[in-house]
Length: 398
Image (cartoon, rainbow, N blue to C red; front, side):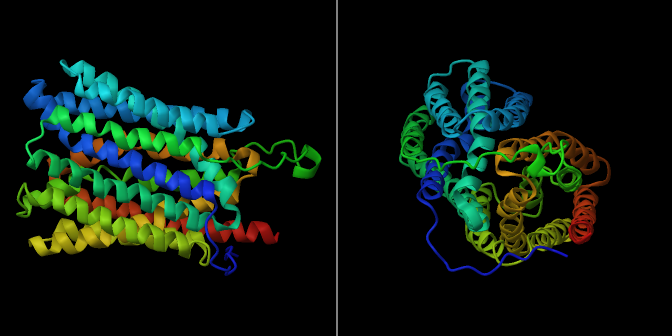
């Protein structure tokens, strides 16, 4: 049988969760003020080739994924998780001004990789800290965190666009982006980390083999990996939107609309995750993903694109916060850092093969077939997680 969270009174989220949400908001405002402008800065100001953009982002994401795994292990071994979170945010904020000082393409590469080092160090400990503080409101907590994160992705590009429209140079925008990063770091200082319960003794846990990678968690991560193989970069969706007639000026607006939809649905999805079986919500989210991808593959008009991108926000809301809330149910409190590290690692390490596969299919058979394959993988993962949930329920009964 599936676990259905019991309805609970709608109490306020803990202060630590609220502060970490605002930390994500300001961090993403600063990051997203820079990120959309980096390709132009690299190619037009620093005269780098298009391939260099792929090198920068690929290297940055790979480093981040590996460090999320390592930082999760460390977060379970140290007495407090907050210092890792603070160091990660502080490092990213400290290195950000150097983008404005870059005079060579490799300078940008070094800054982006160091920025992602900070993200890798803070990511898993932060998720574990949120789970520790949230208690029985993990769904709402991660939904709030995801909503604030996506809100920053809406606000940041809009601020950057306004500054450029006012005549500010790209380097000037990069300097201003330092401010929200500094605010984010200051907010982490104010976070009060909750006390962690002592780990159970082996006799209480029931066995010696109670490592974090239990059969239940391993199979869950395997299903996430199956889905992630079809979850390539959203850049392919923007490319598809462009091919269906959206102008260059409309693409950033489309991206902002998607992130606005994600804000709304992340909050709603997180709230539902405390009242509805979490595995079922994830399965529904993956079905929505399949419908969006298949729909974009067959779309013929620009209004199809706008409608499907708004629907795409539903997928994020029913998966991002819910997957993390479900993960909390699968491990002991003293194992959360490693569990979130493994989760983030699986999501990150599958990004490269997913992108390569989609790109190859796109080039060989066209966008429709590439998007349909991704939809099929999402559908298969949705069936798999429902079967996994049923198996988990029977195992508990036995």
